[in-house]
Image 1 (cartoon, protein in one colour):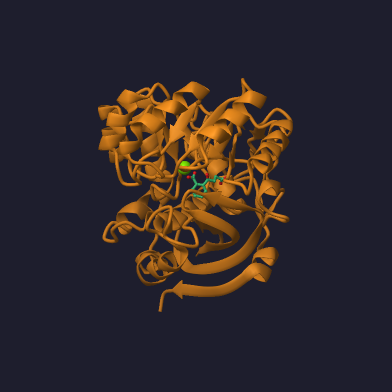
Image 2 (tube, rainbow, N blue to C red; image 1 turned 135 degrees about the horizontal axis):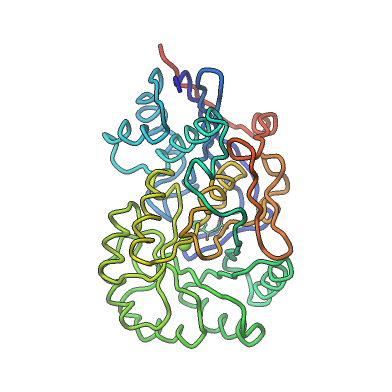
Length: 370
Ligand code: OSB
Ligand code: MG
């Protein structure tokens, strides 16, 4: 793979419904896509950084500059035989994992199609279908939330996750459980609590939750281990797992019993596979998280979810939950029993609608050899 040019695109797409977490609400997504041109074959990647540095320190405008000034120049003009060789070329740049992941994943896409292999197989996947859950944000009222849950259960989703924060937690869970005593239910706090609130967090135990995701600080592992000892509910770490070493440390000290893997958060497929492997060896199940991706990031999440230790339903759901019209063809669809069937064509198995991307693009920058 001789890398000839890298083009950054910012596209803007409104979400079908706003998405609110403990750190804020988003309605209009700004999405950074990378297009990598190799000799004869091109690939796409999505940088999952948000509109603001609230989920993590990364955000779209910082990722754009990091890609344009540092990461893309480290790749253009080089010849790689495998996508996994990209990581070491980025090593001089600290952090900026979502930016790195976007480029590395585009290279995996290219490598798969060059080898005429489905991406899921190249990654080492084993599943031919994957179970799907939904992540439902904080709503304007409890009634609105219950209405959303009803819709998603009717659509077949196998796990409901609701966002929580102080003031939108126990009373909401009571309402959900009194209507649906048996559904598989999780909560995600996105770091909204502190260790002083242990008595409050203990009250979550009565709701028979599959997990509580990232209750404490985004960069903490140690205090989550303290909290896990006090709770019956399993803790799942999201924000604080940025690399395989974090997963090793977290599982070793008992900071969680489940890990959320987001390919962007850990810097690309290679590190995501390492996180997966570390957790598998520690007998900790993982699942694939989501970042309100367009179709490009979404189908990468689907491919990753075919790895063996992705044992729980992911936040990988149908295109139409997010977008009036997605930028891939076909769109991602979920069956009535809450599964996504894995396509078997070379690459992702989905076609990127470049005409649609051009129409949605609000800025563009190409980096190539001088
Ligand atoms: O914490 O999992 C999270 C979206 C943006 C930022 C952080 C998170 C989320 C989600 C949405 O929960 C998952 C999805 O893409 O549906
Ligand atoms: Mg989360």
